[in-house]
Length: 567
Image 1 (tube, rainbow, N blue to C red):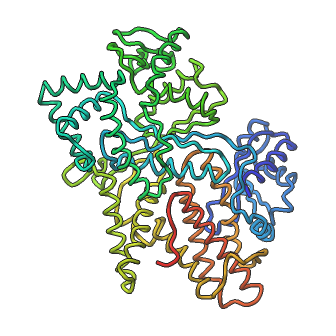
Image 2 (tube, helix red, strand yellow):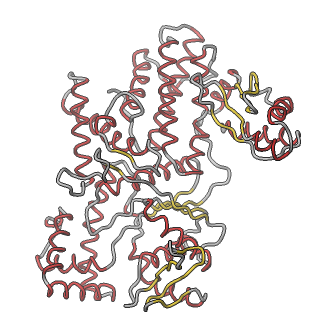
Image 3 (cartoon, helix red, strand yellow):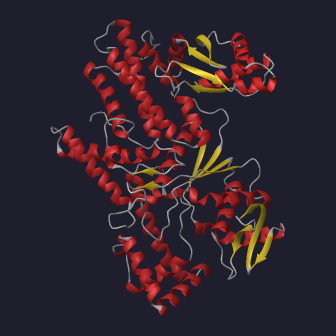
């Protein structure tokens, strides 16, 4: 049930009846008891309508029909309306929402562009945020019934590949030699910078690659296949839903790039500037007021990321028939995407029905306030980060449960470690930088993945100890105690939380919701005995426990984090 939508619709109807039509703002109360929603925005509407805010709030309170939903309404402050939901209504919603998630009646075709590593190198920590934030968004959209088309726009083209392919052939490299792509790249780069003959051969290789030379294309395909296998290993370890079928690389648009330039020329959008072909739009200027170009073809005839991105937008419109295209790319590319989206609109590559969204994110920082690095100042490989997470988590699991055998401890440690890495990132507002801290992310206290995984396993233990099949439970819970009401209210907010993520692309809202839910359950568990209760009360509390476990498991799954029955 989307409670906010229901309350908003009825409050807005009442506002119109009271002569102050407009959008109401409904939010969850921040009060510790979590017992109500609040309608605000009334002050602005009252001012616009020439009314006293508190008088308007009182009028709305009299006019709105919430008798089936709320116990009482009250005006607070200068014009807020507090809405205290009815416990019986909450209970009935829990009984009726057996499916947990209601799918959209108007599903969209949504392209999600995420991860997109450069295949010249191994994936590093800089690829983590795009990969896991984009994946959480894609999973959530699918859960809500939308058709999600994942697009892994990997970098597999350009000048650097001439250097890499030439080095690969000179040393007779094979899959074993390419097991460390980072070392391979560094060795090729040193040769390119220090050996003029090698640099010349590399440039010739680029020309042959772009011209479709079969031999060079064969070398290139070998390198790309090995690079993609490295990526897929990490996606599997991270429980990320990307597959090889989701790869739609830069190279796939190569044949369309001259067509993009031709179409921009035909639309009279291109201007030559210092030999390069550019699009100048009035809305983009530098600090000095000079126009900022979107360069689509260099003076030497080469193409740029902007050309490829325009071709990708056209493909996503014409071939994929997308309604939305969400790009999970770091915030430093914000200007690039604003320009590309604007050019695509003006050129007719993206009609108004196609909603283009850049979903920017900040940087993972070290405790020194600088981008996260190794102790020697190098880039941290993503594989090394995951290895350390799993090792630290396994040691922690052994410490907390010494009786566990080595295999079980390692298995649990792998799940806890990967979950901790992902949740530490996903729980932060994606537009903010955040500080990477092993101790915080692996803590069993606070808003962390280990805390939520432990909460789930603790609920599972209730059913195993009581020998109760939670899947067989049914009926309507009884919400008498305050802790029962607060837990029930938290449970029925799951749908609106997911819809907020679908609208805005901020998975940290789901993390905050799950942490609140787990906290509400712990409060409920401490004050409302479950297994030692009797009759209808015991059945009701088992229902609440089962629904909480189901919601925690599904919520963590949408974040790409696994749960464990025993920790």
